[in-house]
Length: 105
Length: 261
Image (cartoon, rainbow over all chains, first blue to last red):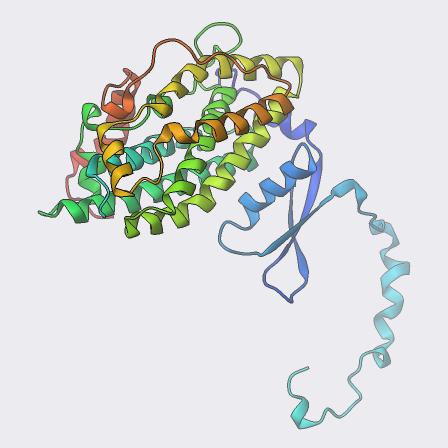
């Protein structure tokens, strides 16, 4: 690794912000989160997402979002946020008889 | 109308040699994301070369194959532009002293990419239906290759003082080699009269100038002069660098002729 051109490949990664990538696999479906990447600007992030996440024809549309724009809950809040719904089975629509001709739901 | 064989080989050799050169970055890219992006560009180019060699081999007949054309011709039979065979190093002075200088790679991909896009775009209207079909597929790839290289040219040119200087040094180094784009070989003249090549390459120069000037000015770079020695790679007269590239690329196929994997 004495070549100065390749000596510090991680330097760029530290300088470039992180982006979350969402790909729509086909028309009519929603964009799904598929991973993240480092890039220097929005166009760059889009281009990198194209090369990394759609090179096997995975998508027809890409969104990139700065990771820092995403607001996430603290893992410490898990108990108060999510545990209370654990015993509310009546919120699941499983108490209906689904007519046969509706098919899969 | 069938394209003259040397013209098909010129197109194929351009794609294969540049694809092989860019593939030298595989595993050494400045960042993992860019490593993958550059490998994608190489695979597109090698794919284009494959289609063109298949077409050439089919027209040569007599058992010719795409592998034979790629792996069993020596440097003096190759007809690629000199620009695509140069190593990724700058002129070995100033800021571009490394073995692999990404600014040089980007400058080359940009200068050649702009030309390649105009060429494939023109060839979509070729009277050679097989070549027009290859052009229709390749022009989309070429459009993306230019977008990729142009993005980096602007990012590095308009980046730090250091990245700007290296990008400028790379442009200064490579610009003279673009003069070769505008030479017209006898086969290209023949192609123009047959409608295989809708225009002589020199007809694309104004559009190429516009693409180059626009990106160079957005990047805050200075467009260097393209005067001086005119390289002749497309006529089979190459720099010393091509034979080393071919030796590495061809050694496996020559050590195991006809091997399948």
